[in-house]
Length: 315
Image 1 (cartoon, rainbow, N blue to C red):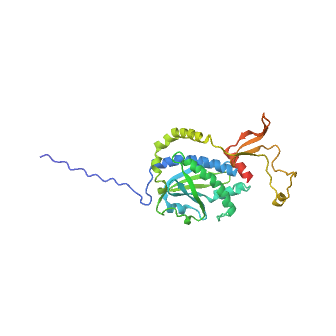
Image 2 (cartoon, rainbow, N blue to C red; image 1 turned 135 degrees about the horizontal axis):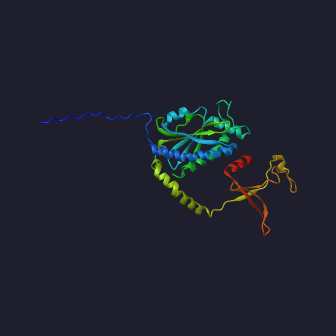
Image 3 (cartoon, helix red, strand yellow; image 1 turned 60 degrees about the vertical axis):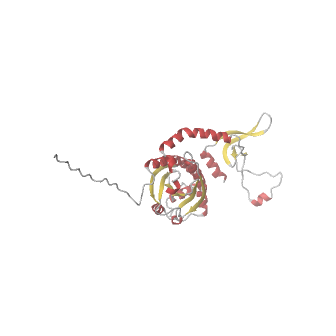
């Protein structure tokens, strides 16, 4: 009887697994999130350039999975962090603005170089919170636009928190998706970090397939844009032109009588600002049409950067 060969013993394949940092979002979904938020970096660059009236570059630093505890421990105290509800999901998220970015922004808004050097870590004043809130309003619009190719979202219930330990939007051991964007200008640099708990993105993850995102980016967005234009074509919006503006004391305003002449801060040669709703959108000059009606002739359509400059000047 022929000798039977003994079976060769094979070593079992062992794969390491980190139970403290389980990978609950696969690489393709992370890559899609990163590609999706590259547009957020571009929008942030426009927002901060307009707010600071200077060139500000924003680049994606990293995308990572970590625990909520480690994210909170990485934040400074005091911090400038906003927690918000991300609809239509039932979860919350956080966006943290590094303190050097905050102090550089405040310094620039009030006429400085936009530098945060030499500023000690401290709590924000009410005035500084107001400056951050105005910029945050634009950041929220940028974030909603970022998610639009995947799912229309609405950000609400925004709250500022300066102590990271008080932000309890999920369990400490819960996995979160952390994105970091590096903000750089001539005299300032820092990170802006959105943080999404896993359960907040859980209902969105099936939409984050690379193929579906690319397909929607290439095809459906054009049809969606045309459909939205059709819906908006019959919408009426208020339009007004502001030719001059001035500030006077309340006591002087009470004494104004018909026939009085008021001195304006606006120069005679400066164009009128044309508002659509409450937003500055165009510049214009006085014009009389063929029927003798006094109107305004559009001379320039404002870029987003110019719009932000006019908003800051009119405040």
